[in-house]
Image (cartoon, rainbow over all chains, first blue to last red; front, side, top):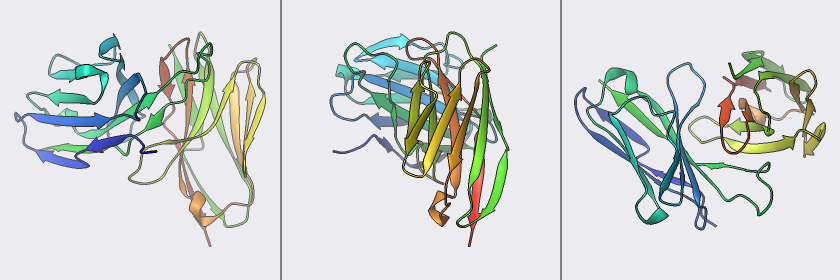
Length: 118
Length: 111
């Protein structure tokens, strides 16, 4: 079974440009999450999709970030325009909660996209 | 404020030795606590997951403990191997899907 995949693995852009990150979750996983780790800090939650709907986007830093999940399959995270402080590693994770058990919500992570804004 | 603190920040041990990593949390409400291993350049991989009622769980040479009263967890690695060199991240979930990550402990296993 394929795991969570992310594209690209690395992206280097200039301040003010636009970048779009893509995440393909494990097939059949309704839940998809975006996280970010900036240099030297812990991983932080950005948002959570259940199928195509945004369940929680409380972690999105500002309106320069736009996440979509068309058709409830893959997701994209667009940063427009990018700023220096957006540099970091963006992780995507997916999960399928076992029926009747929210406590064992195991999330499977992708390898991340390393974004560098110059 | 929901927080997860890990110690030590980094650790160097010799191959074959045991080690214990610590995680203290102030997260409410508590749903579960997970330990992840993250190799360089890769995403975190789940090692153990424990709910409120569980106080120990093993996965091979990894054993996690949880004291929900003191809000502390530990990850014990037995007979370390070079491949154990990685970051170990403690993650606490509140009800539902909210997750709070610790900053991780960077473990270096030397031959």
